[in-house]
Image: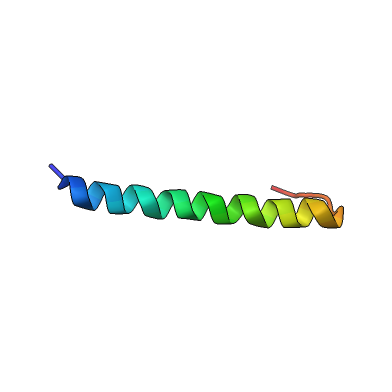
Length: 37
């Protein structure tokens, strides 16, 4: 079993990663550039 603290740290890291991607995508959309996946 993973310790709850380690799991929470991993979860927070994932959330921050997703937020960073979303912010980057919003920036690109504001510039009116096509988003390629």
